[in-house]
Length: 458
Image (cartoon, rainbow, N blue to C red; front, side, top):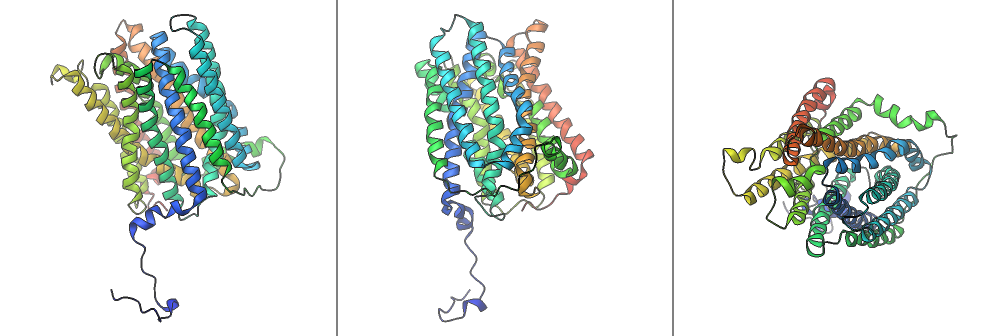
């Protein structure tokens, strides 16, 4: 292509195309979005450390998969009770202030966990420890329920509509990077210090840094005219989701896939009983396994960021969720008690095979996350985004926490209740969940053909 003459009228000459790399990372010239992204990473990093340490500490104190399942139940109940007012608040109040208040509450809950862990000895007052932890998790659940819809709707005001799919991709990437580094950092800290309380205390610091970054974001939320708080206004989000079959179908797909296919709750059992990394390093193995899913997701983020928007978004999403189910099945089988009977290999090798399968699951799951999150935002009017995002958070958040409870219950059922080992219960629970995920994909593709036919994501 010849160079453009500097004297030529620029209105008559089409501009040179922006290089792909510049288009991909142009969002980072937006100072408000960049601050938000850094804050989201730091907050996610801290909470992922907390979740990893808490799961490990509960299992070390109770040696019960059911006790791990109650973590999800404690987070799910406030989510169900608070979703409607959280969505209403996100549409009727300043979203930035909601994000700040919720983050402060999460920091205070982490302080409570640090005090509980530090003051109650490992082998003493297990009942009191569980009561304090589950109560604090209810507080965490309330804060997250108000944070999620406000945060999801908040980011749409920081970027243009054309930039939104890429912004959501980077937003997901920041969270996934936190999910890599957070569990790994927690695993190393626990391995070196045996002090879970220190992990919780570090999240208090992370919450403070996040708040300082959010305070610097310039954001004006155009609050619509006041309307009386009524049942009709509260359920607007549910009505909109039900009437929009594409949103309803994608949320349903993701909800049941996570509900059935999530093996994250059982990772402490896999790390300690099924595929230990090596003797004495179960805490480190747990951190690595937790990091595997977001590592795969981050690789997927870079792939999506350097590609144009998906041209067959619906079909791609269905295939990715099916692969997620298959990876979950293989994760449950990739160990010495199962495939090891036919394929003898060192225990450490099985650990890394399982790590790779978790990474694959994270990569394909991230495609589903980006497609669903983008569709929810671009197909929803701004005055309803808070309430629709709250419904989305309820579906996905409930499936995460209820899925954790389901995993704990089925592990207990297939394990101790049937006189099997903890390892056997975890393996059977994981494999059955993966099979269920694939069945859900087939059902959703049949019930909502609109998803199969949905084209370009933009």
